[in-house]
Length: 156
Image 1 (cartoon, helix red, strand yellow):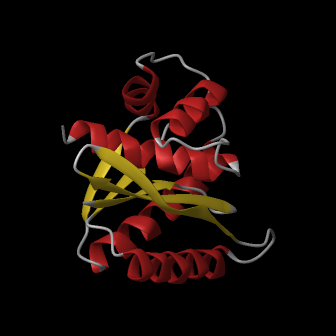
Image 2 (cartoon, rainbow, N blue to C red; image 1 turned 90 degrees about the horizontal axis):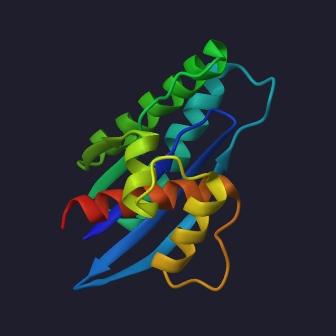
């Protein structure tokens, strides 16, 4: 079973693809899709859709795990992220993936067993769970892998 995790964002969208083989979880691909600042939103969204569609086509995942939107203080940022989430979910839907959404709290609990874990703790656990020498970079890719690992754990 292959899972693509998504850490949504308009400027930087993180992705991570894992494969579950028996009881092992293997990292297949991870990285970010970046769009230039000051580019019209519709162009940024098209770039995200096209790039993510290519990544899905290359990696052939069965499921998408995406972080649910968490409204904090900056509503403008939240709206931008919601656009990126929608485009990512559309790319997954068009590719026939099952789509699963998890809150930041659910991801922290699944990865660290502690709902108030900070970013570094989550990223270190991603490194450990995937048996990597280093924490995946950039942070957005590590966060996307955490989303993918959350779905892998929810399947057990």
